[in-house]
Amino acid sequence: MVDENVVYVGNKPVMNYVLACMTLINRGADEIIVKARGRAISRAVDVAEILRNRFLLGQIGVSDIKINTEQINREEGGVSNVSAIEITLSGGEETE
Image 1 (cartoon, helix red, strand yellow):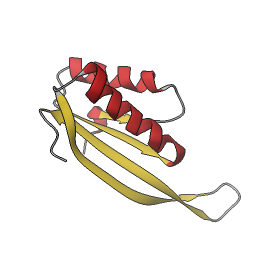
Image 2 (image 1 turned 30 degrees about the vertical axis):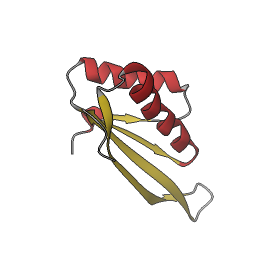
Image 3 (image 1 turned 120 degrees about the horizontal axis):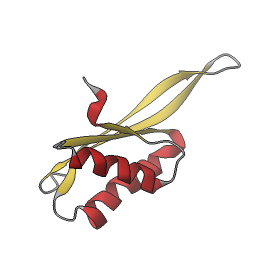
Image 4 (image 1 turned 180 degrees about the vertical axis):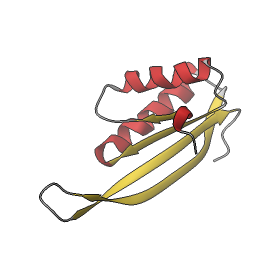
């Protein structure tokens, strides 16, 4: 899978990620995937909701949501489980 239509959400302000998504849409992307892990999950949901309800009202919808748990190797040794989300946004109305 090519990551050209993927926006990885981290600790920056929500509007930075909304702008990144809008840039992809303006370049002709018909599908955008918003990915986040851990505490950034709520920020990823905010990005999707702002795009759907403020900027692209009726033009884009949530076509898929995937959740999982990823194992991360910690610096001090051992493994941590971290929750992850992948929100797929595409043109048209919501399917879920």
